Length: 613
Image 1: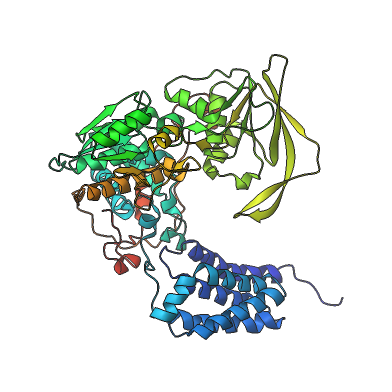
Image 2: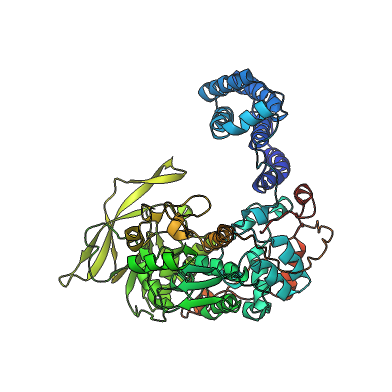
């Protein structure tokens, strides 16, 4: 070799491309909801065309041809034979492409022909996109309750905290709880990502409720009494949301709660270090302050009481949640010291704390509940806490920040370990969890599936084993009443009307299976609206707040402000709230990053950019 080699040439070239790729990826990440899927497929194809090396004919010639045909479909200029041509070209590319750039492009088009068949048909037959294809404000659309996020951020920016809470409560009566535990789907496609990073929307909401207690903020004037009576079975987030809006609409509401206190899984499933009880109670007091809501505590509903309720009330909303843990079907699961995660967290909801002093605790599972149990065990004095999970760390369904917090507090993650049996001593007390090592395999149903590895079993020594593998619904009393159930979930139509029942509605976890707090709230809001229509009314709920005019966009790139937590070495020994307050400077800077999509860009296409009722 007679040429000198520069170690910089290739790296400089790659950096040059990175200047294009990085903002391109951010733009893809912030793709707004409501976009035409065929336009997105076309954009994907065009990016594939830019990536092809030109070596193989299927890729170098097939992708441009596919893009040309799809461009006509997007422009409403295609005819039915073109779809057959697209199908044939895509199959050829998928079967003969030399590398992933080509054959995955073909696979994407084939999948799209199947997934978006109605959209293709509308483009060709009707000359327009199908109904519902229209860009919307991402944060509002992706919030299950459709809270007017830009409005309350604008109010927070002006430090009008009471008004911000009123705007939030127009769609979600749990501003405080959601400021602490919401999984913030509203941030997923934040348009600010194009510039730097998504807004910390939950952090801004926490800034609001930290400066104004929800129970001190006035609620809208209750409508004139309708004389109608609504029964709500279950006092969790979904049931109380339905009760709140129904009461505002002028209906009289009676809540039947089986436990000593309201809150459902917010109280009996989320530890107080994540959701301090006094802050949860602020939201609950605010809801009850509306008036027209009566609560019957420790009143579980059985077949007979359900029959009486359905006869005596004009409408019934069943929102009992999923409050029992799933059983672990392995040998030894009946040993002493094995308990469900729900059982542990439920007792803590009534201030009954376990004493795990000096014990070794193993938690089975990889969701948020598993992290809650692991972190709770540390606070209960456990000597060691280990999480056994059959997939990889990155496959855990728990929020990444929950996993990180558990690791920081000293929880050991034993991933790719599938429990096979529990060993007990002579007194039938748990001694160890035996696991079979796994390796990660092919993707099934959207997730890589674990496969048993040819490795010896491992033994995790344990004094306590907590099972956090899911939750079930106690549906038997309602089945006996006559309600239809599918895999213990109540069957209802898209309007939450229970199948085969005249005046019964269902929603939340008992309808969908275990989901999130904000999804349960969204169901309660929808139920209140649909019950109101069922009863012959069409009430509107108005927060009566003037929304500040939009400021000019702040186009300077900033780092995202995140909520800090108390030091792990301190917080792991108590049940006090782990999150610290955002400072005023931090919060107002974060508010200033909002691009007011309800006014600029997307909002211009959709009027106000949000609909709550």
